[in-house]
Image 1: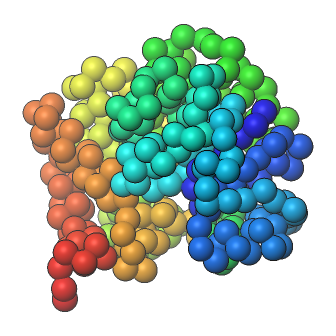
Image 2: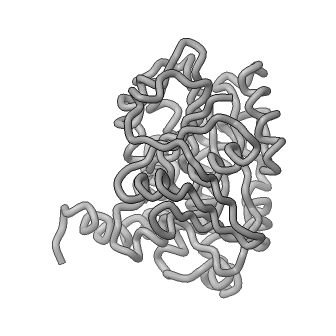
Length: 311
């Protein structure tokens, strides 16, 4: 398959490198020094089990130079999705489809509003990976998965082909029976432990073991479960217990991108995580008091990072 990685950050870079490693034709779209180093030295993925080096790597910042591809894996931040949809138009042919990898539950609809729903599938991924330096991505632990599926949950040849391709990489891959359920399960997981981690500035090994923060994680997740069910999403009643199994198995030093960005004073995905829980909860008439507290607590730092406040 001819694959474009639009946004070669932690997730896009990791999954793109795994595809390139098995010989798929992968083009990495990146910017600045990160792009220049990938062009000169290749893309290095540092993992606990050894490095992956894609060299030479095909990389550019110009979608026009790439032209239509079979699939686009979208790895930009949540607030960049709509802008990225406009920029990726040269990559989109009549048979191209886009797989968003963002956390949250709104990326597919944002893409569809620009590119049309027929070009979009639902998608999500899990990986503790981030840019450690130009041309260098650090991937922590062994939890790496990707899920995608048609928005109407029908089985399709294009999704089956991409699934078969990812199976050859060794990455855990799945076409869920209900992609909306899968997206909300992921939001429940990341906004639950991610919000608590961002407020406490503690890694998962700490937040899951301190009784008070563990209780906060579970309460955040229960609120998200109630919002989803009120909106007609068929999340199972044991979704919180299942998510906590993942939390308990995660690498103790792991942190979310939300926590890292907040700590570094960078713009974060707060609005698409905890902010979305609060907003969608209000729309559904479901109270989300702990998520509201976390959102309100983090919002001043988020506004400072976006230069809307000075302190």
